[in-house]
Image (cartoon, rainbow, N blue to C red):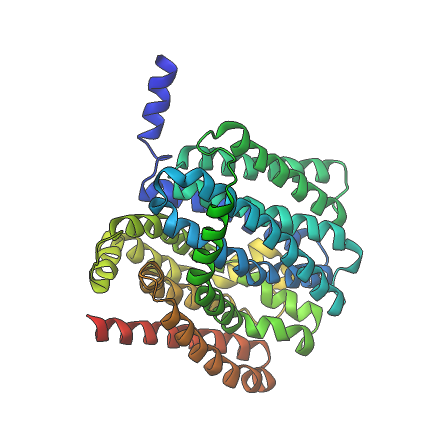
Amino acid sequence: MKVKAALSNINKGFLISTKFGHLINQILYSAFSFGVSFIAARLLTVGLFGEFSYAISLFPLLGIVPLSFIHFPFMNFYSKWGKKKNEFYTGNLIIATVLIFIISLFLIGILILTNTLKEYLPLIFTYFFLYQIYDFQRKVNLTISNILLLNITELSRVTLLLVGLIILNYMNMFTLNFFLITLVLVLITSLLIPVCFSKKHEFNFEKLAFAKIYKESFQFGKFIFLSNVVQNISANLFLYISVFLLSTDSIARLNAPKIILGVSSIFLLSMDNFYTPKIAERINGNKRDISHEVFKIFRDIKIFYIILVIGCIFLITIQDFIIQILFGAKYAQGENFLWGFIVVGLLYSFSRPFLIVIRVFERTKFLFISSLYILIFTMLLTYPLMHYFGALGGILTMILSALFQLSIFIFDFKRNA
């Protein structure tokens, strides 16, 4: 009884399904991604990190497939399946596994075509596949508000990464090969934790449910997929073409400060994870005003925005010190673009409430069309600016594109208010 009471107290604390619990979860989740990039930047050569950072920059782009057709539909429709939730989970798990395997092959194809990390392709494939499977299980537990298990899992993942790094450093074995092996082992262990301790779902395959999931998810996800692809390309076009315009050292110096953008993603993704299932459940069968939901998000988290703005201003003032401390002197030899990524992160944070509500209200076609406008805008700017200003041109394009996106959302919001 005492153990149950203790667990109950924990569940009433920072690990539960509250805004703070989701924020803690996103911090732990992003700490792992940040740690991987940070460790690689510190301990690999600049050239090898340039290749590695290019490879992992493709992860979010290819991850759009399961995100659009599995994750977002799961979070939107889970509450609507009632007593058939086990069938819903099983069908999504099967579809997710097949999709992830296929896009993992696409990743390897891109790396072969760009002559990137050819000696490490099997490990890159395994790491990406497990990374995406882990993301699916995480979205499932976020949807059912299993925050206690999720935070324990995330904490274990970060701890295992640190232990692995200590072992590699102690044995003087830190190479990209052993680093990738460590990442694979960490992900395998992290996948086993929720499987062993979560009894929320049973594996229950039903052909009719599978067909319904396929149809439902495709109809919902097709425009989200197109929108996310367009948005990702718009936001990262300068990075994708940098492999043709810049040296690997320049790519590394450009990508290193981009890691800091992950700090703002903690805020953005925790918003997604908390508000998407909540709003979806609240408007189930009940038409709500879009502007009401957007205002509600901004009101709920205004204190976070105040802290974020102050934090961004402070980081920009000490950006040279940050780069020197985090990445060392080898990344301080040249222009510092950290300020640009901080500004972009701030603009994205103001766009996010609009994006969440638009997606939950299934205005996916508008999302795609607006994203297409942003892509056209970005494509017109990227090459000319990078041609004349190099890496700085890429940063300027990114800022202008993020500002253009926010302007479109504000205009649409006023029109529907």
